[in-house]
Image 1 (tube, rainbow, N blue to C red):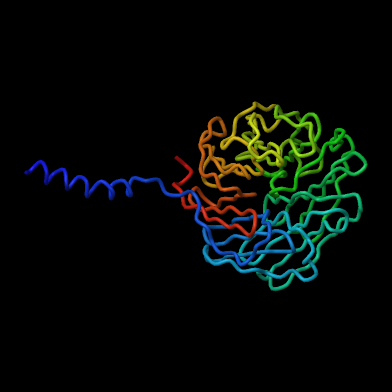
Image 2 (cartoon, rainbow, N blue to C red):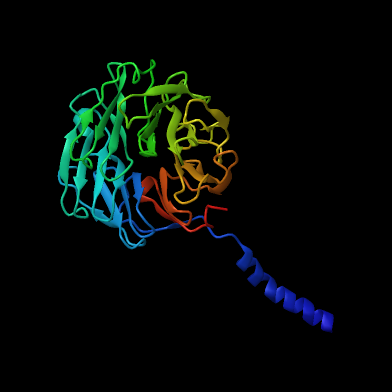
Length: 350
C-alpha cells in the first residue's frame, strides 16, 4: 500500500517536474500592427528597440512590449532595409532600391518628424546597409557602380554623408554584389574597424577597413557562391579580431553545405564553419555583454554560439530576417509578414 501511494505521488509530481525542467522557448511573438516584410532592427536596451521594413514602415517600442508604427512622410513606397537607433528619440533609417529609391532619413524626436538626409544620386546605385560605431560616426555601403562598391561616411550622426574614393580597395569582381537582406552585410567594431560581406561572384569576400571606412582591403572567404542568390549575407565582429560571416542561398533555404566562416585576425583569413541551423542565414550578430557569443538566423531558423563561432546550437526553426541583442537575455528578431519576436530563452552567455 505504501508503495502504491508513493508511486501515485511520483506520477502526480512528474508533470510538474517536467514542466519545470523544460527549456524556455527561444522566442515569444509580439503584436506589431503591420503585415509588411521587416528586415531592419536596432536594439538599444531591454526596453527600447526600432525596426523597419517595406512600404516605408518604421516601428518602435519604448517599453519592450508595445510596438508603435511611425509614419515617414513621402516614404510609403520605399523599402527600409536597415535602421540604426541611438536612443528612444534618435534613429537613422535607410531604404534600399535602384537610384533615388535608396535614401536615408533621420529623426531626433522619436519619429514625430523625419528629415531626408541624402538620396542616392546615381540611378545605377543600390544601397545595402548602414553601421555606426557611436552616435556620430557611421558608414553607408552600396552595390558596385562602374565596378566599385559605393561607400559614404558621416561624422555628424547621419545628417550629412561624404562619398569615399578608394578605386583599388573597393574594386568589385565580375557579378559581385551585396545583399540588403538584414542590414548586416556591413558592420563595425572598435574605434575605426569596419567590414562588409559580398556574394554573387565565384568567390565571396569580406572587405576590411581600419580607418573608419576611408580605405579597404578584401579577403576571400571559403563559402560557396557563384550564383546571384548565393554568398555571404552578413558579417559580425565581437571585437576587432574575432568575427563570423554567414550566408547561403536565399532561393534554397535548406541547401546543405558550409554556410559560414570565422576569423581570429580581423578578417585577413577565414576558416569555414557550419552555422546551425543548416541552410540560409541572412544575419549574424554578436551578443552585447557576452564575449564570444553570436546569434545567427535566417529563413532556416536561428542558432547561437558561445565559443566565438567554433560550435553552434539551434535555438528555433521559425523563419526570420534579422536579430539584434542588447544583452545576453534581451533581444528581438523580425521577419516576414510583420513578424516581431522577443527573445525569451536562457541567457546567451553560458
